[in-house]
Length: 254
Ligand code: SAM
Image (cartoon, rainbow, N blue to C red):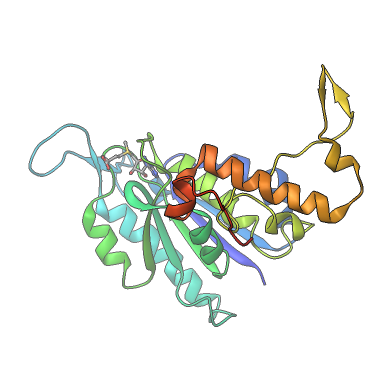
């Protein structure tokens, strides 16, 4: 299956990193088909205007609805022309509008989006996109407003890069060794255990003895314990309330 990803932005060059590393390879391997669209191609005035002052007053500019409407309609038309979704999970194309006021993007959402046939990212700038674009797009897309975190970026491009990378590595075949995905942080609610490679001793620090023992049972138990301790220390919010409160029998099935 090839996953189609469209990105609409006023800064197409910002998305250039999607052409390198694993996502670049996934495109060359035909697992992902990615197209970046310049929003200004959907304007009709000499200045290729994409923003205007806000109704009701206030600071900053708002992205105009007309170019967004045309860009998204054009992508939806192309999707229909390419034929019906190939998998039952695919449904309609999913339109992702990054924004600090959206649902917090996480690994569960990434896993869900990695099942889709067609993702479209709409990169806002300025004070954001005219609200009517969200309502109008719902005719053709499943619309999701997703936030990278509780801070404000200048535009949706960085969020699109981060989300695309998190989603793409979950698309079957994009990461060579699927087992490495299973053991990662956030896959089952715990952070990953510490990892080490050669040399065994470095600047006075040594690799924990258990990892050199060759005893797979002991190694698995040690790693599990490390995951619990690390999660409790760095991200107690990820643990069930009793565990996070420091219950002595921290027993979480992984
Ligand atoms: N006025 C908006 C607000 O307060 O919600 C912020 C607009 S921000 C300056 C411009 C654009 O950056 C947004 O439209 C969105 O595309 C993107 N953006 C900013 N922060 C983001 C975040 N935390 N997650 C995802 N996208 C974000």
